[in-house]
Image 1 (cartoon, rainbow, N blue to C red):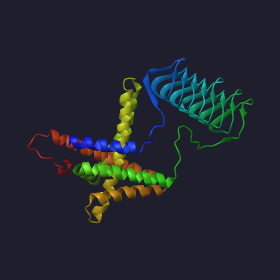
Image 2 (image 1 turned 135 degrees about the vertical axis):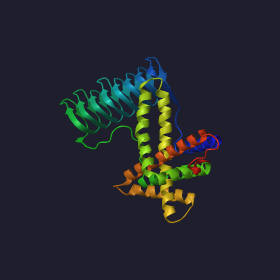
Image 3 (image 1 turned 30 degrees about the horizontal axis):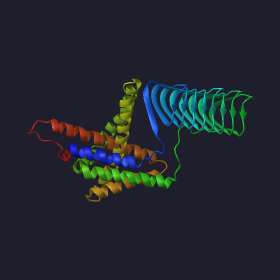
Image 4 (image 1 turned 90 degrees about the horizontal axis):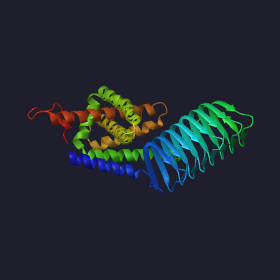
Length: 353
């Protein structure tokens, strides 16, 4: 079992890494209570920081990605800024684009963003210069007289635009403005096909390495769907809360980040196992017993549900809960069977692999 489990993890990691583009530049990662780039310091590569407070007084010669309680850019970031924090304050210069999400986002009078500024926060205040468009979403958006925006100002929330502020483009309100960190755009059918492929690949790995255990997971989901979905819902809600509790303590930040990765893989595995369970159930109705066909049918049915506007999100959510809960129950049964005294058989015989 241990060797099979290790092999499954390795194969899943290979599949996951294959889906991630290769980095185009070197990157440095820093973490701690406070991460500081001193005034006389230059970081000659992209910087990713995890901390209670991130302060850049010197130069980051590349992109800066910061996850922190507070992010202060007093120096220079020659690339793009992506900040997730309670407070984000730009007093210096971001030569590229800036994306900030948090409780408060403040571009000081001395601050400058050379490209586009995307900010999503409870309060957004602009006093400095934005070279291109400003897309601001918040409870309150304040653009003060010293502010200068080189493109359009698009906002959601309550806008206070001072008379002296300069906006070279148009000013327009959008109720459903999507601001913050965005990725590249791809055709919808390509994303659908990609999702179908990687789910089939992960399912194939699971069926090859854990044939009987995978059957046990499907059995739990089919025989006790409500219980499986209930356990899945508890894990879906409870695990992120637990990770946040760990992240509150500085010591727990690395554990929380690792846990978030494992949680993401568990959600993905739950989706695939839930799809496999649905395929198994559909084939059982037709009196067909073929695990590979069950995987293909289940993944295809769940993927096709994406094209139904009303139920697409709901179907995937239920499938994740079903598979995640059934997976947890099967693992728990395996644990109980392993610790049961010899001579006392398990009530469920499909749990062995």
